[in-house]
Length: 336
Image (tube, rainbow, N blue to C red):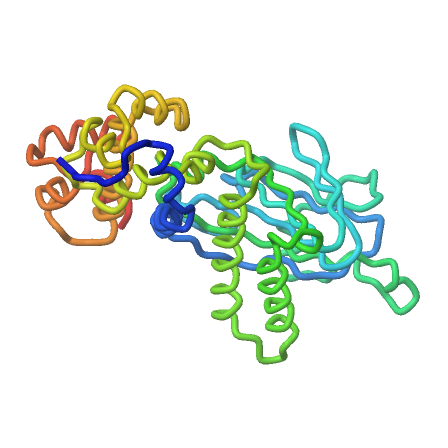
C-alpha cells in the first residue's frame, strides 16, 4: 500500500498543482501523432464562398489513409468570414479569429455571398484565384489561411472525444491565446519568404494544434468532462498515475489510496467526472497504448500485451477487439 503523509483529501487537493497533471495532456497529444498541412493562404474580395467537404471526403481529396482523421481549420488574418456548417448555426469570424472543425462536418466559408460556393477542390487544383483583389478593391479584401490538422489513433482517444464539434477562438482578444498569435505570426513570416521552408510551416501547424488543446485545458469556460477531470486535483492525479504506468497493477483501491480518498468516494468522483469508472478508463487507455505499439513497433503481441498489464494474450486480444473493432493482428496490418 502506498504510504502518504496527507491526512485529508482537502489538504491533498491544496498541495496538488495543475502543472503536475500536464503530463496527461502531453501523453494524449503524443498518441494523436498530429501533423498539419496548409491548403489556402489567399486574399479574397467579396462576394465569395468556398465549400469544404466533410472529413471523409476531405481525407479522400488529400489522398490520406482511412486511419487518418482530417480536421479543417480557418484563420482570418484580415477582414472577416462567415463559417456556415451543414447543420447548425453560422459563426462570424473576425480578424485574429480561428475556427477548428473537430467534428468533421461539411461547411462553407464565405463573405457577403448568396451564390453557390466554389468547391475547395477547384482552388486546390492550382487554378487562378477567382476572388483575387486588384488595386482598386484590395482595401476591402479578406485575408484567410485554411488548412488541416491530421490526427491518428483517435478511436478511443479521451482528448479528441472531449473536443467540441466546432471550436471558435479569438487569438487577438485574450491573453490566454498569446502563444497562438505568436505561432500564427511566425507562420505568416515563413509563408511570405520567397524560399519558404514547408518543413517549418508543418512543424508550426503541429505546435498550433497543441497550443489550441492546451488553452482548452487551461480555460475556465470549458464544458468538457475530460478537460475538467484533468484539472481536478484528485482525478487529475489519478489520471497522471494511469498514464505514467498503463501496465501497472491498478485497482480502485490502489488509485484511491494514491489520492488519499476512500475507494467508494474516489470511484464515485471519478465516474461522475469522466463518465467511465476508473477501471474502464484504465482499460481504454491500455488499448490506446497497445494500438500505438502495434503500429509503431515490431514487438510480438505477447510483449505488447504484457507491457499494458495483460499476461493472458487471449484476454488481451478479446479486450482489444471489443474496444477497437478488430483483433491486434488485423489492427497491425491496417497500420502498414
